[in-house]
Length: 319
Image (cartoon, rainbow, N blue to C red; front, side, top):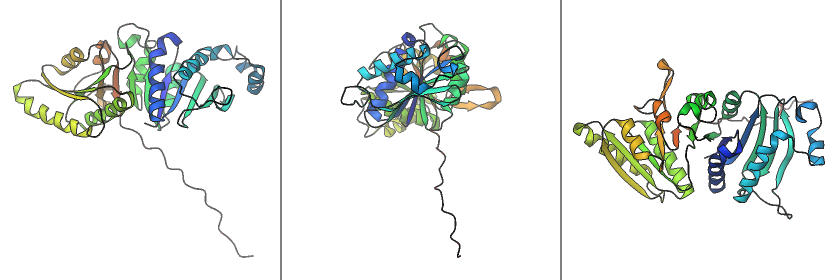
């Protein structure tokens, strides 16, 4: 895992997502970005033209940085950062403007990874999705406000937009608790195999068990479902994770929701079908996110970062 994005709105509603992002970054050495959005910065010190260097020198934290400061304190308690001789997190740079409406504090992680706290102006859904366009992001973790239903995750349409359009894997930390296991819905699709692979990465990093679940509609489908389970188990060989396989019969979404409940992270591969502008998870539509009572991880294939061509010296000429 290369980079993790954790958008935070209200600190209390994002603690579970923040904790998970911190644990994964600490274990895997993955870069971590904590992103807070605000619709308008014009009324703050940041929008007034005051130099951000002066703000840092004066020890002034803009009010919109309060939630990011709370996040930093919590992640420091996880021992995520490198510390200097004074016991303070090592800064790669203090508060500064990276672009119009984008401000950042950049710290050094325990394994040398980058930990960034970003404040960005704009529409939350658009800002989050724009940030996630960086192909190095492999996972977005979003918090919830404790209400039922996808439309109430984060803040209604924001989370729905992320779920529909996220360019990478997306974990909705609904009722997420520490050390709960992972339940992976297994089919014969390549997207299901990728879900198993990513579940293995998370399970190994967090020290949690995995349950592989294949669902057959009737007796005639049991042999194929069993084959899918065996193929999925092979992908996890050598991972050192506690593994269990299950085969159930019934309607796939109902079985998965029943088995997952609140005790496991329900993990499914994402398949996009542009004809209906809806995400299908194997044979399961977006409704499973709305009905789930626990956390859900929707996996996507990692993207390839564009190659950076080395600069070449101009050809020599004879004088």
